[in-house]
Image (cartoon, rainbow, N blue to C red):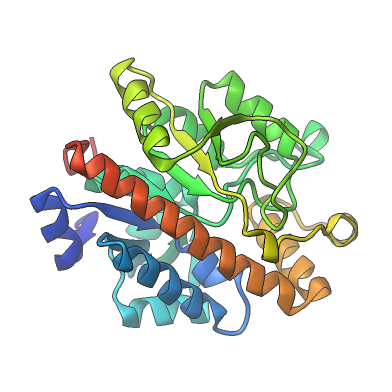
Length: 308
């Protein structure tokens, strides 16, 4: 059996010393952006995190090894996407047992990050409830993971093709704390606002205090910190989303393949603006995540390393 958890040396040293670390989700690198842009996004996200004195840890499965802190070479391989699966928590065991390589979704990234002792994970957008979930029951495993893991996930809302209101209702039912930074409106990924109200936090310091209160109260669910995309990059795209959903339905695209296909199709219709905005919001999220990790590390918030 392959040893399940490999932690890179810089991440291991940071965790041992109690220094802040941010976990970086890898599906966006391997499957979320076209034409090598995944590598560029990873470099920019990691650069933003490092600029704030925090260690980034890109997470994925490499030839069956669950890896916390992908190397530059491994990130380049992931960005090409060839032979790299998409793995939620459900697919992790298969990837490990079969010695495959896999980019990890939010659910898998959070699970692995917490096993490594990393509280804060950054992503573009979390998975959620699909728009036709009433008939397909298509709900991302990200939500179950958030309901059962006391992590912090920094995002720009849910992935743009999903049902925002239904996702927020699910999270509320399962006691996941959802907050928007500097706004009382939940962001809609490419757009700074979705029209759905959530609790506002004015500063990262306030968000950190809320997280510590959640831990002190024994609440097991995650804290979702939603950061609106910068206004200069914000735009609406309901029409291409609706068209992409209809095309997917006609082509019979379902299950784990649906979200990546929809996102890719929307990017094709919108053009480079979608890619530019995606990278911009990732950098913006990374900045907030790094600040959050630094705030929690300074107060000694940490976890025991290892799957348990």
